[in-house]
Image 1 (cartoon, rainbow, N blue to C red):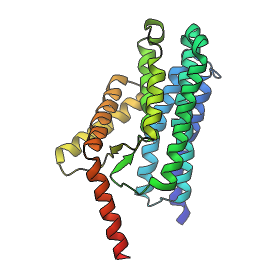
Image 2 (image 1 turned 30 degrees about the vertical axis):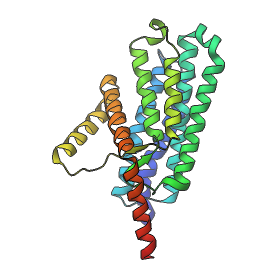
Image 3 (image 1 turned 120 degrees about the vertical axis):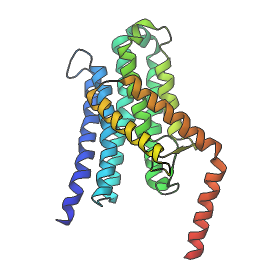
Image 4 (image 1 turned 120 degrees about the horizontal axis):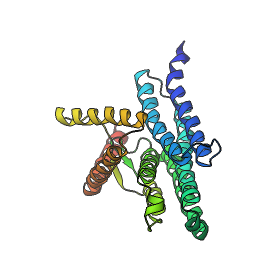
Length: 260
């Protein structure tokens, strides 16, 4: 019975892993459909929501484990490291055929940069950074990078970007940019319980609305606005307070060393 508590969080991780694989398959057109690229992007959004649920379940059941952490990283690599790159590559291939033919090397190179950055980010996090800064991410989490590109793809499909815009390189630039942010030394504030009641209610309301919008596949503009607000405020706060964040952590590490 002691091991049964690990079933729930690992079940969420397993579903996320499979949805990430499904996203890649759908992007290639393996299962057909009216717009497989759009469905592929929605699968990545589903994975993001499940990724948060497996962490919540692990804490609720006191079922955190080294196995769960490694399994979660493997699922993240598929869902947020590889699937977004495949989704964009096949979006170009399906919707901007001529442009893709002329720029296929650049598309592959940009996608490769993103995938490698995601792999480095996850390996670095597991090896060194998981407990370094409890209140901050060092660099953009793969989950955030993946869902940013997925929501962007939903919007691009909704507004027929590939057939109506001449600046087709923009999604590729954003993909590479988010990839580099994953391995950057920038700090991003974590979503945690705050001191102010109104702030906590605002966070909770938006989390609930995000789950509704994500699973119902509606309101991509709202989801993108949440991403941009978190991006600007989170990275902005981390950048302004970078020195104090580093000094606080060094002081804590020194105090712990002296206690030992």
